[in-house]
Length: 102
Image 1 (tube, rainbow, N blue to C red):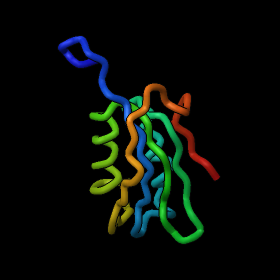
Image 2 (image 1 turned 45 degrees about the horizontal axis):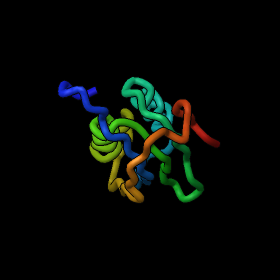
Image 3 (image 1 turned 90 degrees about the horizontal axis):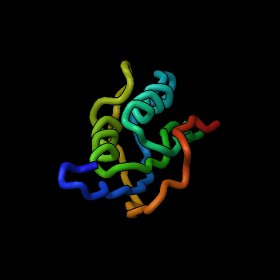
């Protein structure tokens, strides 16, 4: 909660990460980061070699994981691009945790 007592805005965003991002435990590291930040949603590998998912949580935390998805990622990965789309404000998350989908 922000220091002024207001409730932090919650947001939802879909993402897709391009580059050499499969075979380097990207989804596991993403889940660990989201669990640490209190973000809900999911992540999975695609057949085309990208990583896709959905993030929901406090705007500042979603911004933080968005930077991780865009710039850092898991050890040994190479991120060429991260697309963030369909930003929405949410009152209540659609998910109860963060999961890896198959």
